[in-house]
Figure (cartoon, rainbow, N blue to C red):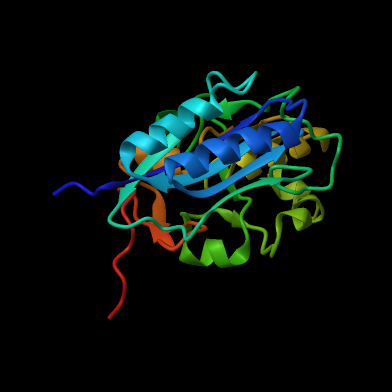
Length: 248
């Protein structure tokens, strides 16, 4: 029996000229459709976590793609038995994910990305295609890492993403000379993280395109240990993108 609730995770870095106007439009449409979740509207882009019946969710995604610059906004899908959000909110923020480094502007320059299948192959063979050692760098918070992470990944032990720049600089020499792949849940944090590391002079750095959720969707999930923490009532997803079973 298929699960009835569609969960969408979508983000894109692209300039938003009038965030308050976009907030009002998206809010009106979402409330009319009766979906649940959160949309962040920022000058640097949009970020949305939505859930509901399939048709309203797809209509909301189509509305997001009507915002100028977001016509090709990608979205990751998963299914659940229940809607994992209590309400629908549209908020205006300064950043999609706060980093406090204004020189990091993914809307204007995107860091190199590695797709899920290529990464799985690299991890299978232990090196990238040039023979360089591959180091997985977890950009998430410590409590997320505790739920699950890539095998042998470097965990910076941070409690919030604003701590990432200082923490990664302490490991600069350990990263130098390796092919570094930064990763996070859906791709936002690792996208900013990769750009910051390029600023540090670590040029052989990639972001995992689409994050852990896309890796789960496009691969067997090999090299992942545990589950993936998500910021809703599902708590964590297994590598088949289903909510983990609740303990009795």
